[in-house]
Image (cartoon, rainbow, N blue to C red; front, side):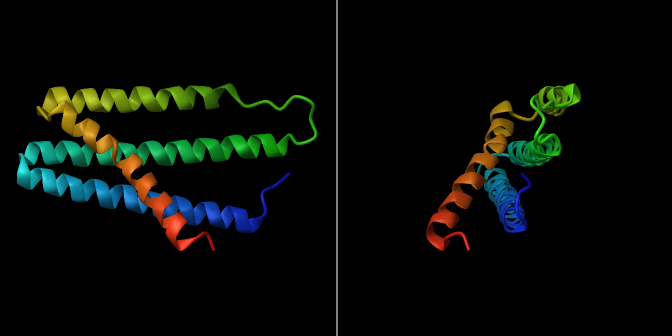
Length: 138
């Protein structure tokens, strides 16, 4: 069963808003942290925000590819996802962990600041959820 076009468009709008809100809230927090604490901590929040945004993009693309794989095998008794998909899901976290390690160790950015930036996706998702509740899904 293929997803109807309106549902694809609904997801596309949701995804664009979530990405925008993640970046807007994360970079706003980075600016505030730069002014209140140190510029290095603000850079850590900004770097974490970028990693959170990238993580969401990769997750969204991976799930989209998985849904396409399942839809292309509709009617088959055993749907199969390529093994490379599982590696991509695991490699995403390994790559983000490596980047966080490099940022913290090579650039002396506070780890807590980078972790705070990674939470920007949660803040964006909360804001998007509130938007959906109050504006309604049209």
